[in-house]
Amino acid sequence: MIFNILTSTVLSLKAHKLRVILTMIGIIIGISSVVTITSLGEGLKQSELDMIDDSGINTIKIIYEEPEMAGLGYYSWTPFTFDRIDMKRLRSVPDVAAVTADYGYGGFTAGEQIDSKLKLFGIESSAQIVAATEDTSPVSYGRNFTTEDMDKPVIILDDNAASGLANDMEKSELIGKAVSLDGYMYKIVGIKESVDWDSMMNVDEDLFLSTVPKKAFLALSKSKPINAIKITPKQGADRDTVISAVAETLASYHADLDGSFVEDHYMDDMRQQMEQVYNIAIWIFIGITGISLLVGGIGVMNIMYVSVSERRREIGIKRAIGAKPKVILLQFLFEAAFITLLGGIIGIAFGYGISHLFSFILQTMNMGDFTAILRPAMAAIAAGVSVAIGLFFGIVPAIGASKTDPIKAIYQ
Image 1 (cartoon, one colour):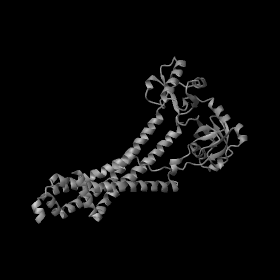
Image 2 (image 1 turned 120 degrees about the vertical axis):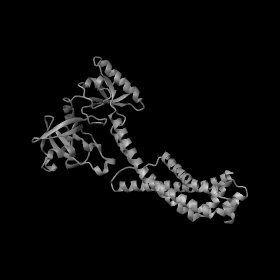
Image 3 (image 1 turned 60 degrees about the horizontal axis):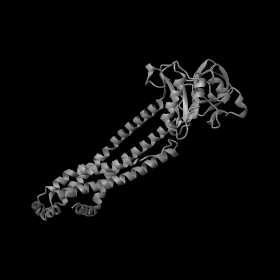
C-alpha cells in the first residue's frame, strides 16, 4: 500500500511542477537562512575556541589552593609561592616534557611571562614581559632586537604599554628613552604593531606582550614570586595521570601545608562560558530566521487546500473504487512532506554555499579568518524540520480530503 501511495504522490507532483516549485520557495528560503546563520555561527565559535586552546594547548597549570579557598580557582589569593627547586623536582616526574614558571595572573601560554610595572617621567603603565624568541612580532616604531642586543637591557614594548607611557606625546618619541621596569632601567628600541580588533580571528598573541632579551628576562624573574607552575606532558601521556603525579610530588615536599596542589581550570571555565554565549546567540538568530519557515509552512497549507479543492473528483473516484480515508490522508500528507523535504534539501545546499561564500568574503576583506561549519547533526535536523513542517501544515488539508463524500465529489 505504501509503495502505491508513494507512486501516486510522485505522479501527482510531476503533474503540477510549477505549483510544487512555488510551494518550495518559502521552505528553501527558510531552511537556507537557518543553515547559513548556523554554519557561520559554528565556524566563528570554533575559531574562537581554537584560539583559546592554542594559547595554552596541552599545558597544565598547577596552583596551590588553600582549604578555605577550594573551588575559587587561580584568582584566589594565597601566600604560598613555588620556587625553582619545585620546578627542578617536577622535571623528573614521569611523562613530564617541560616545566615553566608562571609569575603573574594573566598568562595562559605555555611560556613564562612576568607582570611588570613600567615608569617613565612619573607616568606609570603595566605590561606582560616575555623573553625574546626567533619569532618576534613586527614593530611599527623602532626596530627588532639585533644579536648585540641580547646582552643589553633593552625592551620592545607592546602597543598598549606604549600608549600608557606616551601620554601626551607621540609613541614614536618613546624610541631611545629609558624606562623603569620594576626598578631596572631599560632602553626602548621598538614598539610592536597595534592589535587589529577587526580581525580578532587571526590575532598574534605576541602583540599583547612586551619583549626583553632572555638574559634580562632571567634577571627580572629572580625577584618575582612563582604563583603557578606550567606543565607540558609528553606526547601521548595521560593528562590526569600527569596531574596526579605532579600533585603528589609537590605534596610530598610540602607536607606542612594544609592545602592542595590542583590544576587551574580558569581557561576551561572561560572556554565553556564563551561556548555557551555563542550557542545562545546562534539559537536566537535561528529563532529569528525560523519565522520564515512559519511563512513557508502557511504557504504549504494554502497550496494543499487548493490541491484538495482541484482534485475533489479524483478523490471521489478513488473513494468510490474502494480507497479508504486513511489512504487519501496518507497520500496528501506524503505530498506535503515530500515537497517540504525536497525544499529543505535544496535549502541546506544553498545555505551551505552561501555561508562559505560569506566566510570567504570576510577573509578577503580581512574581517575574520574562519570557515563556515555545517555539522551533520544540524543538516539532519534541518531536513527533519522540513518534513515536520510538511506534516504539521499539511495535516488539516489532508484530513479534509480524507473526509470528502465520494458521491458529492464525483458529481460536483
